[in-house]
View 1: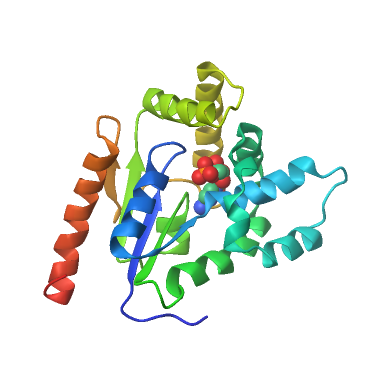
View 2: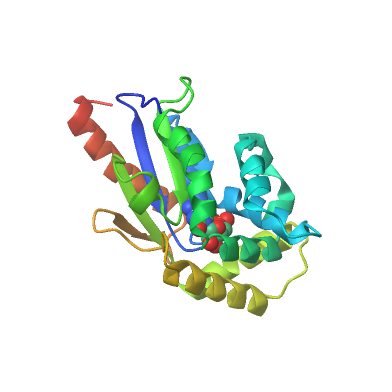
Length: 223
Ligand code: C5P
């Protein structure tokens, strides 16, 4: 794989609905970085398995994965809660994780030239996919805040679900994601913790920007 030199690389891990996607988007816009929401890849596979009438072989799944384009990840149907849970279930599979690794690494280390670098968010970005990232963040928030946020998002999309069901589903996914054998969600020692429970989007981004600008200034002299 080609590795572009002197690019800004940002790795983010977080439990679901902690605000990582929002912050990753803000980072990508401000620093002109390619953004990849890696959860969408697992959601795409989760949806494929959920909707398939017959049992899918690894060969078929790999073929689908090899054809994934960034625009496939924008489908609103990937936001459904049953798709999220299906994603969490298949994400523990080592072989499937291996299939999606190259796609993520290519986005991380060889983004299109129009970008100054990349920002990826997910569960194993700081620990597996972008171990050498220039910046590593672990973004979290308490479960009540996360459930409220996800509930509001799903309501906006007219999805029929109660706040209690959203909380239950998040807890279930937290458990699956943190306790699986391969690539469990964890805060690596070199990741900076950002707790967004009491922070607005703007305040969270300000905190991240301050950290990033300080290091970039050290590296480049100025930004
Ligand atoms: O981030 P999002 O909630 O969309 O992710 C859906 C599911 O995909 C997660 O609950 C997790 O099980 C899985 N995932 C993963 N590794 C990633 C990103 C997502 O296992 N890097």
